[in-house]
Amino acid sequence: MPPGTLIFFDCNTMHASNSNITPFPRSNAFFVFNAISNALQDPFAAAAPHPPHLALRDTPAGIVPETGSLA
Image (cartoon, rainbow, N blue to C red; front, side, top):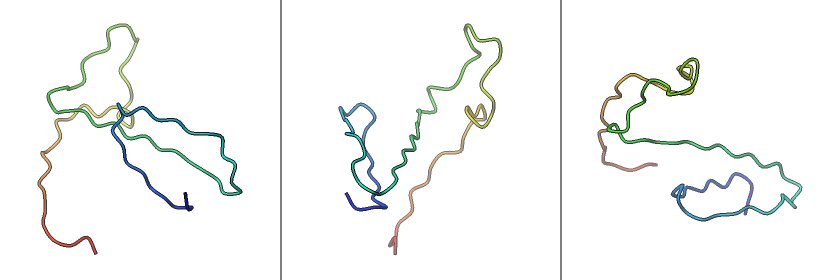
């Protein structure tokens, strides 16, 4: 894959990644999205909840789709 390639896939999709055999560095970033109905709760066994930069406890606003060109 060329450098700068971005791939999106469902987290339940089976996938694998071989070792990086190219001269280019490779990074991964994983973003997890939950339904609003799957809100965070108080921890069951941990001493404290995750900090806000890891787990937002505010009720998010709904996403409003927009129309038009991306360019």
